[in-house]
Length: 195
Image (cartoon, rainbow, N blue to C red):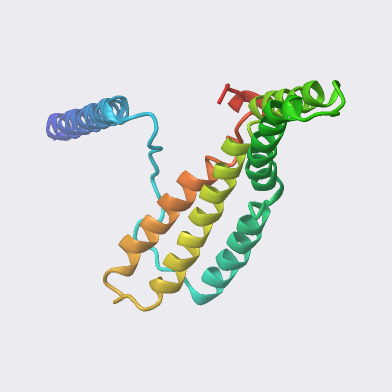
């Protein structure tokens, strides 16, 4: 009888060991598949795994998200970069034209044309260094992105309940991609590149 019990015990521990080994093999395969997928995806598209893939968004959560997204959108409602870029371009064109035209005028001070030319050159250098155009486009893109996600949240409640979990994943994927761009303000910090 002891031999039967011993044999059953050995068989159970052998089965347990093979199950453990198959679990380890399965996890290794999942990890290598995940690494292979991550290596083949382009670096510009962030991968997102939403931990609550079967989620639905409650009206309270939608209201809180809308409030936070509206605040984030308002941060990107910048007018100074647009004014400096567009107004600066017009100003540089006028100053350059004046620097060309002034010397042909009788009685014009000799210092006026070089002054106009110098101011135009300074403004071009400042625009290149500070990247007003790139910053203006960045803020417009970010503001539009937040508005698009707010629209997605408004549209979410009208979807059939069977489509809501997938759409919720799409919302959080878009939000993750947009939030990951927040630190990429052109010509600031590590995003500092010539335009």
